[in-house]
Each structure stands twice: as structure tokens, then as C-alpha cells.
Length: 64
Image (tube, rainbow, N blue to C red):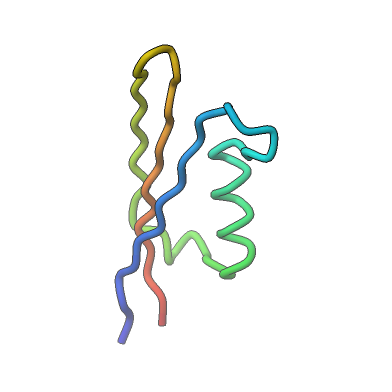
């Protein structure tokens, strides 16, 4: 039986150590050994407030 899990990623670009959403997601997928069969969905969103753009992603995946 599998569990459905989520993982949230965020990027503002205001921090020198901030990694892009793509990098964060790819690193997580590799680390957790998530396969294409395990991926359920990825949702992206972005907004800006007072000149700072924030990008977010939510990964839904199955874990056995």
C-alpha cells in the first residue's frame, strides 16, 4: 500500500544560497528515488509583493 505525500519548494532569488525550483525539485526526486510512476502532480505558482517575486511548487508523489 502506498501513501500520498507532498513536498513544498520555494524560490525568491533574494538569497545567494537560494536554488531554483527546478534544481530543488530534481535534487529531491533523486534523493528520494522517486520514479515517474510515483509522481502524481506538480503545481506551480508565483506572486510579487513590494518588488519581491516568490515562486512556489508543490510536488505530490507516492511512497511505498
